[in-house]
Structure formats: C-alpha cells, structure tokens
Amino acid sequence: MFNRNNNNRKKPNAEPRLNKKDDMLCSWKEIAGYVKRDIRTCFRWTKELGFPVQKYQADSKKSKVWAQRSEIDKWFDERKNNHNLIKNSKSKLDWIKIIIISSLVLAMIFFAFLYIKAKRASSALKVMTVAVFPFDELNSNEYNDYFRLGLTEEIADYLASHGRLRIIPIYSVPDYKSWLVRSSLAVADLGVDFVLKGTINRTLTDVAIQVQLTRAESSTVIFEHEFKHELKNVHIIKKNILDRLASELQIQLPIVTFSRSWGLNESEALDAYLKGKYILNKIKTGEQSPINLYYQGNYYRDLGTEESNEFAIELFSRAIEADKNFSQAYVGLAQCYMNYANYGWDHNIKWLDKALQLLKYQVLHKDEFPEYFSSLSILYLLKYLTFDKETKELAFSTISNGILKYPNDPVINALLGYWYFLEFGELGNQASWNSALEYGEKSFWQNPFSVSKNIFYTELLLLEKMFDEAHETCSFLNKIDYSKMSEYRTAEIYYYSEKFDQAENIFQKFEEPLNFKIGALFYLGMIAAQKEDHVSAKTVLNQIQHLSPGILIECELRTASIYFGLNNEKQGFRNLDMFFDKPITKKMKYYFGKYIELDPNFNLFQNKIRRKYFDSKHLN
Image (cartoon, rainbow, N blue to C red; front, side, top):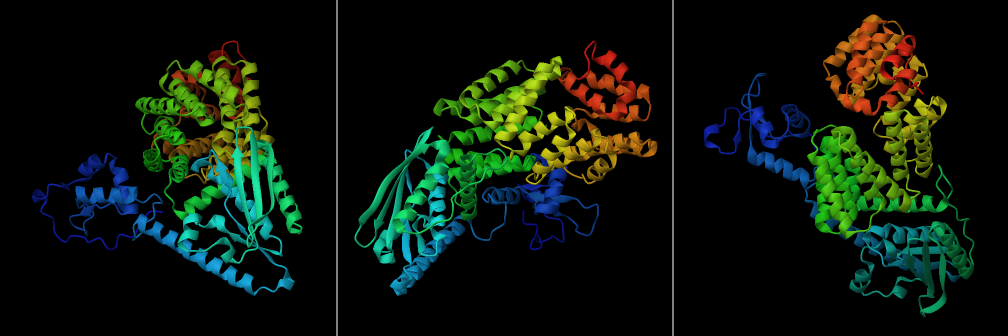
C-alpha cells in the first residue's frame, strides 16, 4: 500500500553539522515530538514506510538518529496529496489528465470502429445500431448520479444482449456533449439507426421516466412514453421500458429480474447494485469530486485504525472544502472525531464536542437524514457510557425521532435495539431484553450486509443461547468481513457452547490488532482453566500482563473466569470485586451477568455470585 523502497536514500558516512542546521532534529524524542506521535510509531514508519530518519553511523547498533523538519514535512505532503496511498512518479493531476485523454481517444476509436462496421454490415443481417444517451434526471445533483447513469447502463446492457442490436454507449463518454461538438459529429454520422434518450423525475415516493426512441437519419420519433410507478417498484419500470423497446424494435430480450437476497426486495437490491457499481467506477477513474472523496473517506474511516482515520479526516475535509453544503461529509467527519473516543485512541471528550458542533452545523443547512440521527444517537451514547454524562435519554429521544421519520432504516433500528440492550444491562428487566432482540433482528433483515451493526445482533443471539443461529449469522458475515470481528465472535460462540477445541483453533490465530490479541489470550486462558491446565492458564495471564490488559473493559471479568476455572475462589472474587466496582460495569451489570451465566468456569460459583452482586435479581 505504502511505498517501502528506500534504497535511493543516501546514508551519511559522517555526522552532519547539526549546529548549523536550524531544521535538524537530533533524537527519536525530538522527532516524535515534532510529528506529535510516539517513538514506536516513528520507528515503525521509518522501517515500513520510508519515514526520512537517518543514523549517524549505519554500522552501529546503538547509533543515534537525526532528521530534518523540511524532509519530514515533504514526506507528509506526499502522502496527503496521494489519496490512494500509492506512490506515483507523476502527479495526481497528470494521471487524471492521462486517464481522461485516454478515455476520449479510446471512445473515438471505439465509435469509429462501430461506424465502419455498421456501414459495412449487410442489410440482410438486419443488425440495428442504437446510440444510448445518458438519461437526464430533473432536480438532481451529482450525489444521485449513480441512479440515472446506472439505470441507463442497465437498460443498454440488456439491449446489447440481443444479437440483432449493436449498442453505442454515448453515456460512457465524459462530457459527451462537448465531445460531439469538438469532433464535429452528428449522431447520424456514427452510423446508428436509432437514438435512445430519457428523463427521470424522482421524488421521495415516486419515479417517472420519460423515454424517447427516434430514428437517427430522419429524427422521426418512433415512440415517446412516460413510465411511472412508486419508487420502491423502480425494477418494474425498468422491465416495462425494456418490454416496450423490444416490442418497437421487434426483438426478444431475456427475462428482466433482480432476485431477492437476504431480505432485500428487488428495488432495494437494484438500488444497492447501481450505487455500488457507480462508486467502484468513480474510484477506478480517480475522479476527485466531493462524492468520490466522501466514499473514499468512508472506506478509510471504516478500516478502524488511527492512521486510516486520519486519512479519512483529510478526505472528508477536502469534500467539505469542495462543497460547503455537502451534508453527508459533515457527518462523516463527525464520525471520525467520535472514533477517537469510541476506539480509545484519545480519551478526551473534546472529540465528541467537535463532532457535535459538526452535526449541529450541517442540520442548519440540510434536512435531517438517517445518518444524522444515527450519528447523533451514537454520540450521546458515547458520552453516557464513556464520560458518564446524563445523555442516555437524549439518545433515546434522537433515536425515536429517527424511527418516526425512517422506520425502515437498519442503523436506527439497530440503535434502538442497543438502547433497550443498555436499559436491560442497567435494570435487568426482561421486557427491555426482548425489545433489544426484536429490533436487532429487524435491523439485520433490513440490511444483512452491515458487519459492525450485525455483529451486535450475533452477540444478542449468543447471550440468548441461540448458538446455531448466532453461528449461521457469523458464517455469512465472515464472507464479507475484513475486520475479523465475525471470526472472533465465531470463536466466542464455540467457547460458550463448550466446543473448546474449535474455539482454541480460532483464538490461536489472532496476532493483531492488539485488542483482538489480548481478548484471544484471555479466552485461551479460560479454555486452559476449563481443561485444568494450570501451567498454560498462568502462562497466558503472564503474557497478558505484559500487553496492557486494561485495553479491555472486561479484563477483570475474564481474569476471574480463569481463576474460578482453576478453583481459586479467593482470587476469582477479588477480580470480580474490582470489575463490578467500575462505573461502566454498574451501567451494564446485568449484561455482564449473562456472560457469567454462560461461562462454564463460573458454574460452581453461580449462587454465590448472584447473591453478592445481583441482589434478588436472577441472571437471565
């Protein structure tokens, strides 16, 4: 991903004259202070990414280092200016120019080829050529281009599947109107028989598509018709348009379907397909429009590392700079700031305050959309859980307003389930637990392809002891999950269903990220305790101690599990006392109680634990 070739960098044979260079940094500490990172990060950048740090004596293992501020600034500038993180000897602008020019040249060659072929074709073959122009969309903007361009391409692809039709894809030429003017070509000069154009008028509930088919040579209109339906039935409009075109051109097209998959109806599946295809094409072309910057920002933000989050901040900021009214980019940037508190990179409420300012700013300029409600809800929940602020009811109010406006939004439904989940964790009431399960399941079927959201649903299934359903859901998520969360959850399911060998095989594979590695070590220690392997269990505890176990909220709970499994009741209760004394644990006591009930290491001590920590409440 990053360029790792650093062979061209010259290594000095003698010490530089540090006292004569104002921009010199003469130690790892000074270098780390200048870039505002820790020394380990700077060392890793030097080793893996070509960070410009030099040694006084290359052959000395204990040699000191030096760097120049100007070279470091240049190194950072090169990466900020390269959004794809791939070193390129040419500037981004040069590549974009090359791509656009190449596309235009290829398009002209392609059209010239089709023109010659069309002229030479025998009339006996009855091959008809159709020029398909991109459908226009009324009251639209570039953020909805995926719909009109994607639908245009879908219709053209179906027409091209017939042997008697040859398609000239005018829609694939960037700025085709200027191209036609520059090339001094009329549509008829392309050797086409027909021209297909359309206009889309889409509202929140309905869509109308005006389609016109004309004969190129005479400009005679063969047919012009408006196809109208509810937006949720756009796939029906697509089928009706193709049926009418087939009738007018006297051809037979394949059956038009877009099959249901994982709870998506045909319209939702088609919309998701068009959007995904559009985004992919945008990224491939390297176009730096605000929408492209936004989707790249989403990608890097969702990688879940501090470095990728910083790149996402840069991309969202550039999208906002390009379009001050791009509401989604404000929300994306707010989510990046929230990640600092959510992932524990910087335990400071200032990040949530900055995110709140962005969310309030964008809502003054744009209508409230689903991501606004979900992001604001998560922000309030983070303030409640992480900084002990009285924002739990604010979160519920925000989620409730979101549900009223967007009752079928999967993220908002998932958040409502999570809110009831927190309510159960604090009060232990079964009604809240049932509601959490209900909205978790509803959210899953509304969008089964969201890994982070549906991992929470698998936890609900696990705690409900629905192990088969939880495993089946994780098996699906694992096919689309690059974060390893679903693989980790699968191992947890094996452990709590007492399939220790399967769990152990998976947990042994986790080496990164650190939170997964530490969590996996805890579980390996719990498995060792269950197998009465005292040596391995204590070895794991020693390993964890050297890896900062405090990275996990539940570290004392899992340590207690190991000690109880080893029948060390005294040490087990000592760790449980520390665990249940935490503020976060007090908010989620009955949630953690479900894990205690499931964990076989606690089996012999369930009654004592219940009496000591749960009063008269039963573990559900």
